[in-house]
Length: 515
Image 1: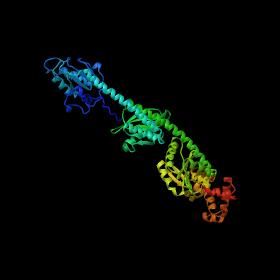
Image 2: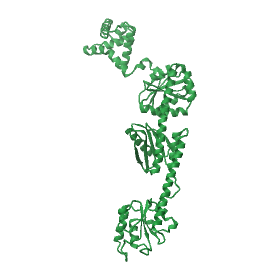
Image 3: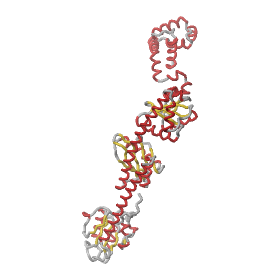
Image 4: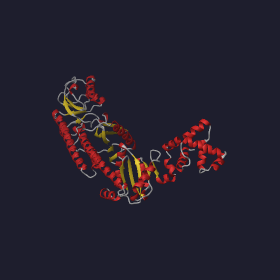
């Protein structure tokens, strides 16, 4: 926010050579910012108590007619007068000499020194109106400069918004105009853009992220402020209430009206850009979904042509296919991140949406990149074996089978691992074990109520490939006992043990049940 015109301060006023003003106070007796405090106006009054008619940050001029004449030994009136001015927020006191008194009363000088109130002399040759006019000119010049800056800044930001990378360029230009760090967070609270990159500390970034998350959870359009250490931040939401698109954060405290106008313009542009970006994103995702369906239908030529014309070539075969589940705002955030990654790695990564799943495709020799993606985006991935595009649907089925075996919030399971576990491994789940327990429950209940051994006998018989003799030997009983128990088990299960399909199902039930 560089503005060449000086700000209206006491230092600027004292620096006007044509006024011949002289600082009577010792700078060592003043607060550090006393001379640089903004002065909104200059007013003159000889009232003993002018405070009802004064405003904050005002410079008061007086000739001293309100003070008792003669000896200044009695400081009480001067101390009371200065104290009233300090309490009212007066920035400085100017004393016109050679009008009533030859110089500044020593008691007034002492009272201002003790109260740390800046005191300066206005010579007889300088009218009070000239001092007021000089300050007013500075105020007007500063206001004009600020308005000119605001118009120039808004033009620069509007031009930045027209660039191909309009959103990033807009944030960068805002940071340059405000001469501070600016960041934009998406609807999931992820930092999308910042300038300068890494311009805030890790501690401030963590505090800012927490505040952004809280603002987004509330879901209402609002501004908020945050202080992290010595750094102040201003936050402003993007989008409509109940449908927030993100948050813009500025490393600055309270902005003046012109600064707020510039930020408001950026908020409007960024909100519109995000709205358009999301509409384009939905169109791109719909197109990518169609490409996934084309690949599933065994027509890779269509998907390859679309990809080549819009994003670049598909990953070269053989490829591996991965799937992950993501819904709602989480899915939107993942898709936006994938869009950026896919742009950077054109020809190496393809992704698309299929219902509630996100499908990813990489070359078989780039399979390890899926692990990095899972870590970076916190994904649960199921990954197929290598295949050509003509076998895409089969590879997608493998990826889904692997995804069902994922355990934990972030993990990668490959179909090669699932295949090594065999068919039973694929159905070894809570649902599979529940079905197995239900199938064997009649035998378990009989053994519990009659202290029988039907479960052990049927399990041993299945392991012995249906041999009564081998079963009897394994259990240490007569083979007729085995026959009797199996006949009872057959009645309780209402299944024909002579059927291979029944025996196979029961054997699988024993494996899942742990029998």
